[in-house]
Length: 477
Ligand code: ADP
Ligand code: ZN
Ligand code: MG
Image (tube, rainbow, N blue to C red; front, side):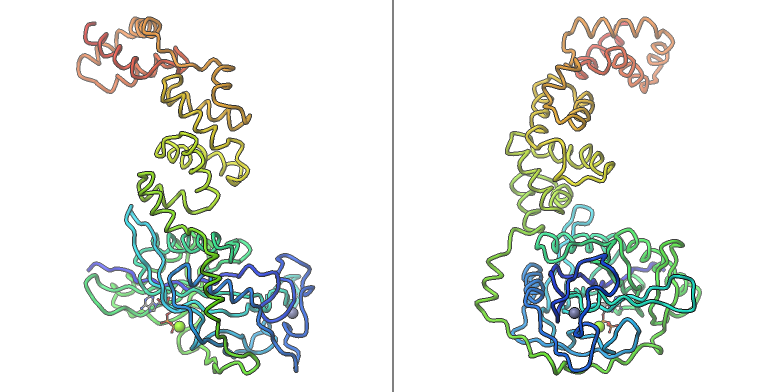
């Protein structure tokens, strides 16, 4: 029997506010433990929370960007449970009336656009952090994170493969970063994800029993954890077993998921409306103001890159993941670079070089106009595409213009037929055996001859001329 997976993601995003959601404490990451706390966020009796308007704005902005309905009336609730990192004994979260409902996000899979539905976006406060170190019979609690504002973005079970889950998460991160509502830093935990997954026989309508995978903090792990879990569930069913509804933890060092708690052990959170906070009723004027502030987002940009520049969906998707990358592309094109050529160089050489040094495009030593300048030299035959790689590397190292590099290093393409012919003749004169084999039908040797001539001309022979000359000579020899 063939199975398919059904996946829904719950993503927690830390909202980019200076201060916490219900008090004035700083949200800065990495400070001395418990240095960013006050009576409100450590849950002293008698204190009152005051909602951070900037946090609400972040959530509304996100909702508008992903086509959600912004609730005319929403409120907070108390989610009750005991844990040392939760000094109040409850987490303030939105429950039955979240700030945003519905909406969707578009992903590109195998060159096709797919819509993933959203169930809701709600706001909540983060908990603190238990630290188990020092080796003694005790643990520490750091409450700096307590009360940091989070959005939880819940998807519909529309995702079907681990690759789609990763694409969804990447797209969501891109949107949040465009909006500047979350920095998307996964290592620091600004973006984390719980993945719900079930399997069912292909063709069956009903969903299978779902398992929740907790706290996944990288795109790669989301794929790895889901791949493992889907295999595990299919094997269980094929062996005649049943899937238990449970929460499992992914161990990134072993690549395995392990049971954390079953449905029977699940908490009863005894939700009830938070009595210390008034319901939220955003005014029409404020909503409009936020709507007006929205810039062109990744999906709109991707569509425009396809229609305006004729790029494939895949290229357009890659180039619009970061605002700065998209701008770099558009600058190179407006400086005269042909769109697909610019895209190829950006997604190939440029990305590789930047990644090698862990550099962002903002700090790229090559300027968009300089790439356009180099592409012109390829177009007018001054350099070959192969030599261009050497030129580009040098441009990246030195920040120099393509023309200057070509001149300094003597990299001008040889388009002098007599010079190429001489090199071809020399190579053929040295390769009687290869010529015999070529004539006997081993056509792969064409590559050998081209390679030898390129070597002799230090890669500078005009490839087209070289090919034509070689063919002619081989036929007549
Ligand atoms: P819970 O009641 O356990 O919180 P929800 O229905 O609220 O479950 O869904 C939580 C997440 O799980 C959502 O992202 C949803 O899309 C996803 N989900 C729900 N049912 C399934 C299923 N059978 N298989 C996979 N994912 C599911
Ligand atoms: Zn505080
Ligand atoms: Mg739920």
